Amino acid sequence: MARYLVVKDFRLLMRGAPISGVVGLYGILMLAILSFAVDPGSAAARAWAGPLLWIVFWFTGETLIHQSFEREQERPVVEIVLAAVQHPELWFWSKVCANTIAMFGLHAVMIGVFTVFFDWEWHDRLGMFAVTWISTMTGYTIVGHLLGAALVGHAQRGLLYPMMLFPLLLGVFLIAARVTTMIFSGAGWHAILGPLRILWIADVLNGIVALLFIPHLMRDE
Image (cartoon, rainbow, N blue to C red; front, side, top):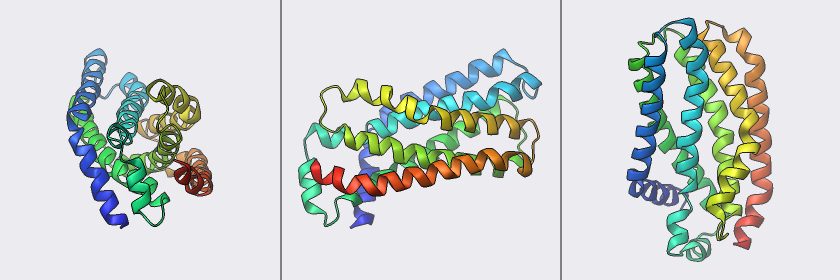
């Protein structure tokens, strides 16, 4: 059942591919503008590239998660899906998995564009950046879907969602941007482990909150 739910949610995301494509083009435009504003490989590029990447990741991720519940809400089939599954919380986790896969693909494209525009040489830094991405986006997808599930059916969902998500995860993305800047500046594992531990603790806490509240929240929908 869980596998079929993930496939269903991923297909819904693919049907929203034009929106994701527009968001991806917007991210590419941001990267292109900065690549012309600074010299690739310079100190300025290393200082600004990390924060810019996380701005792009935030925007693209928010758009994907926000539309995750939209298509089923439009019809509406929320009640049908919840009645069909034995454990309603599986619907939540299937969306988390589907959106994580979609964001991985979209952000991989952004990284490729970044590498070309900035003439970037990753060397051994790509592994550290991948760990930072996973540590950040794990909590991002959990909190984003938790908030999305809480706002399903709300008349002002489109306005409330970004307004509530921003303060909840701003600190996490600030840490991720700082860690990325350190990586781009040549810092090693010993230097970034401290901030990464904060991200890991946040992931564990977000997972615990989701496990506690999602069963009740999904049954109340």
